[in-house]
Length: 350
Image 1 (cartoon, rainbow, N blue to C red):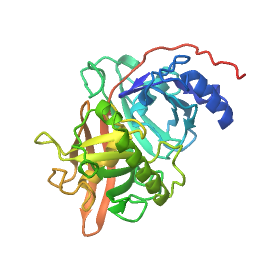
Image 2: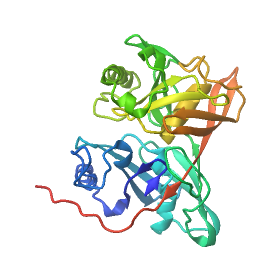
Image 3: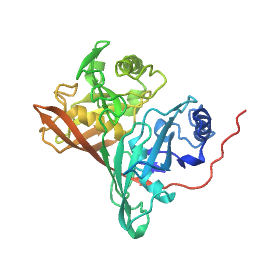
């Protein structure tokens, strides 16, 4: 399925090995990791197309589906189970209905999803006229051609989902290797910095950024130190924390411009989870976004984040005052599409 601006296979968790090492080998074989275009699997040669979603009925009160995510490597034969993916999340509700894990209602179906990776809880609203999932509609999202049926996502309990706090290091802004950063955990741990501090405009294309290997070397050194400070340990082989550079918005009415890294490649558009963390950074006083973001400070706020493929909107419901800052929820609109169903062949281990 395509979920948001990502793509990958969706499995029933019970159909896969329970042993984590064996599971990793299966997913590496499915994707075809170890080759730049994943020629021996169904990956697409970029990180947004080497993602895997595994679904199961939940036994938790008030939760319908447990969503277990895996980020599979493109050129490296590795699997990271630490992060989650908000774009693939857009496909979870439709996939759960297609798999028979959740019954469809007439009109629209609400599916409550819990991320196995981070513990975050999300309500997805799926369009199900006549009791069946429809993928046709007029909703458009940046990074995906055409239009499709909307999938509304309301993220709850996203603050500190991986690190236990909005600012895991205890500081709103700090300096690492001479660069000011804000290390935050909202749906995804993200290290944020000003693009100008790296000699960037913050408006570069993903291709321009990927070609700037000097920037990646400097960014990775900072990211690893930030990971230690955030309590994530050695992150040299982990895709979390992610990294983002920020700039003032180019267009009036927008909130901020961002370039998001996965982390060893620039995202061609924007991650749903990352967008929530960026939005929180943009509206929180004292972060590296101060002086860059444009907003009136009123809640709820539609935070409009510019990215290489367009704009993503995040509806932030929060409180900010003498008692501090408290994020209640973050809402986004995504789309999804069923691409294929059937069997996939897994190579025998030699």
